[in-house]
Image 1 (cartoon, rainbow, N blue to C red):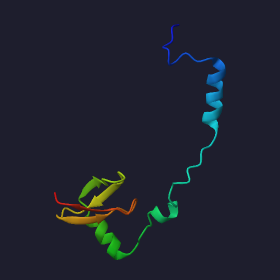
Image 2 (tube, rainbow, N blue to C red):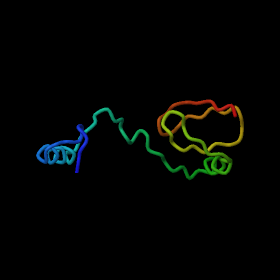
Image 3 (tube, rainbow, N blue to C red):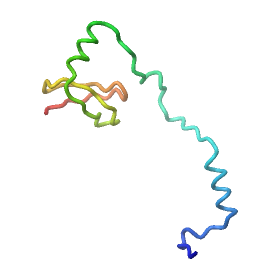
Image 4 (cartoon, helix red, strand yellow):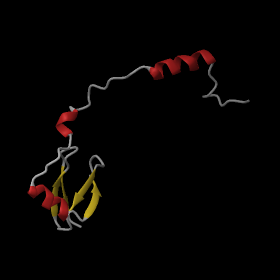
Length: 89
């Protein structure tokens, strides 16, 4: 089988890449997850807000799913990334 020039590697280098891929990588730039966790709110006020949800949108910053009422303009703070956005339509 013919290989392209950028794919022609020895089996030794391929096995070392596999070993490197199995190592865990720690990213220290990840924010603390507890700050962004959703919390269940059993209060009657929260229940009323959930009943007003009529549309689903994605946060423009992080892509999290948000449920919002049909009222426009509406200012929404994403619970995932804490960015504030105003939706006009």
